[in-house]
Picture 1 (cartoon, rainbow, N blue to C red):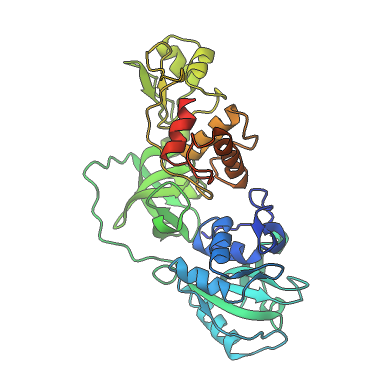
Picture 2 (tube, rainbow, N blue to C red):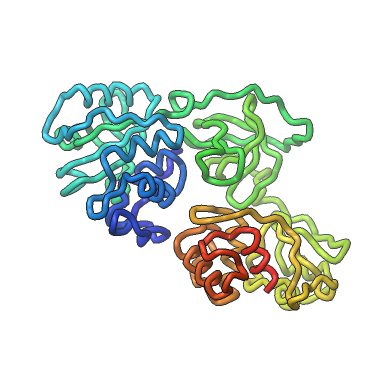
Length: 400
């Protein structure tokens, strides 16, 4: 299912774009982001860096096509000059005809009328046989949903199309056999149309394996990370689907309904598993939760991440700076990244007094600003002052 981002979302409303900010001028990158499956800030940066954002004027008319092409979605702009005030044009008829095949998503640049008093990009999810269009409006949740073509006709300036992967929203399934180590515990059913099945548990443009529709069934193995359920789709392979679109054929197999396995610690460290709590780990180690949190630099004992290594106090792993030595793998992360490593970065920056935002696993402008402030204060000890958490930055963050 397509994203439905809003340009006024607090995560990026104040993000600079086209001489203003996303809330004021970000309808173009937001409409493209819905289709590309990446954050609006990523599209805004791409448009800016490639000359398609103009200070005071927003997004160039040629920007959506260029950005869609860059993300492998075969952007098409059906007319070069404004068709505002016109009806029944060749571009309009072609756009409606192609949208009704179910093989495309659309973007419309609207002029004054039902959607704007000036110029405004909107995303069109689908068009039915009666020319009704389902809208994702970057500037208004109230205008989302089905509209008759009369709401658009004569108000459209530019018509755009973007390919659905594989046509009709179905990417072609590769011939993938079931992995030898796959151990299903049951099956589940997809609850919506056009839901992405991804190779990794994250919203990215480059990890889409397939699109599922209502009633499509897939195997599950009981593993869940964050909001992502792992499954196996016949002919596609193992991947992840967001929990919002999963209906378990046997509700007892929902990972959220499973009792957590007892925590067993056999050495001086423990790797956090799904469902673990710090208090359970502390009890298994025979120490207090407060002492365990303090020793591991955990500012909020209620927030730990799957894969995080928790070390037992007094295990002799303090580093030369007197801090705790952590043993886990982290990646280079920057603006737009999401995941548990972003959460870890936010927790550390919060504990150091640099970050006061939400622990939301989303590397937005606020997280970037906090990281830049930290890098600046470290005077080279955390690498370049670039807002990127690379190897040297991570080493410095964890060592303190």
